[in-house]
Amino acid sequence: MRILVILPNWLGDAVMASAAIEALTTCNASVRFSFVGSALSIAAMQHHPLCERAIVDETKKGGNRLRNTYALAKQLGVHDLAVSFRDQIHATLLLFWSGSKRTFVRSSWHARMLCSDALSLDRSEHLVVQYLHLAYAAGAAASDHPKLKVYIAPHRYERPTLGINPGATYGSAKRWYPQKFAEVAAHFAPRFEIVIFGSPAERSVAEEIEAHLTALHVSHVTNLAGRTDVAQMCAYVGGLSLLITNDSGPMHVAAAYGVPTVAIFGPTRHRETSQWANPQSAIVRHELKCAPCMKRECPLKHHDCMRLIEAHEVTAAALKLLEKA
Image (tube, rainbow, N blue to C red; front, side, top):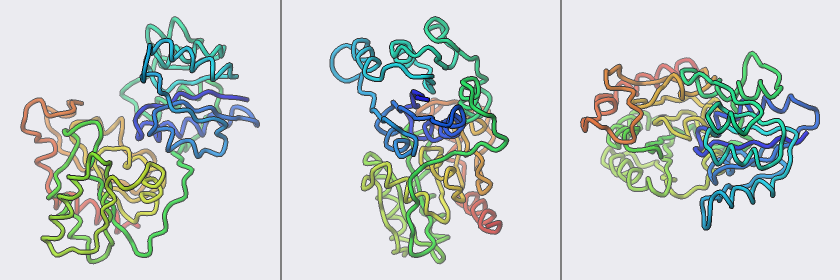
């Protein structure tokens, strides 16, 4: 059985979709996947052992996007079933133009017109659960304990290692402060090596943390910001002993590996996008009237949802996790 899967664009969302992808493997004994998605999502998910094709969606680049989408759909061809984890019109058209008869997607005006099954999903549920509903509708066997899965071997560190992930691609409102990350890292420096993660765009933030750590006389720091591809980042995160992170893609990668994680939440919905099924996870957040606002930048200009979270709160949450380990 050939299954076409349109992945979410964001890395974290793609990892959250992995539980549904694992569920889809139960549809038939001969399942093979064709994955289509952003460069980020494909880089993480193309390692699935049942992946037959992995195609980066570049229909936005050059020319007419509708024409490009049609051409990509014809390149993909007919599949036994097709599932989109993106509720966007071009993704819906991709399913429709592929010629696949059984197509499953979140309900929208275009999905109801063009797809065989347009499901109304409850946005108050965790995003993993929403994605699973699509897989179950497509015929996947239900699981009592669905889990995330990334098929990239974790890196083996020589010593216990703490990861610091100060970035969040969505926007500045999701980012905690470099000095506070450094304070937490310095607290754990006697027992952990320290690795800082980040994209090329987040190098300056990572360097600021590194500078704060130097001022705090912490020297065993490796700054990987902008120096890894997605697969390497997944491997390095997967081998950590502890991760301190914003709500971000690496946070969900850590959940897939069961890495002890403290996640700092401010403007986003923690009930919808927190780590999934990681028993060694903790959330640090403050209950404010203005949060979650779901904005990329603080509309009130005070950023209290993140600014008021102190380093000692994150340190305490991490210590509790380590006591359980």
